Image 1: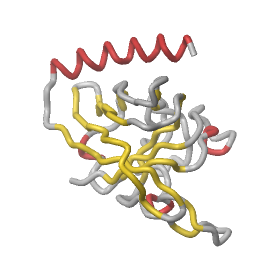
Image 2: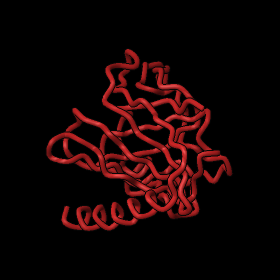
Image 3: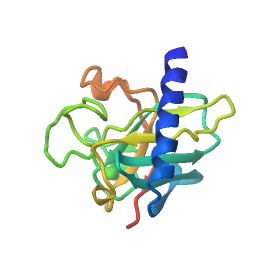
Length: 178
């Protein structure tokens, strides 16, 4: 946890400096809890802003359990449930898989050579709030229309094993409106 705090502090400092130096148009994404029954209550927003160093995502979320969560860009602009291969309804399955325009088929994190959908983990503080900005250096605002942002239960190891880097079920989702 100490490593996460240190990394979070360094990242926040870099992002705040970058943000102040390159003020651009922002895009707000409304985030909602999701379940097999559908899209549920709002948990806040995530602001998207282009910087000289990539896409800055600034959450303003509340009502979450403290911890570290997998955070990704998904292929489709939908948060609706869908039927999985086993015939079970699954939360936000209509969002499709992780955004992978080059069809790499691999998870290597936001700084690796894998798909572009891997974002830095989302950190929720002891008050159940997520407000620490994250930087996606390989993404731009141009990548975002027609996509969704997804928060997964569990963390993310940015590898293919265990399945999807250990991230769990889809728990919150927001459609990027262009």
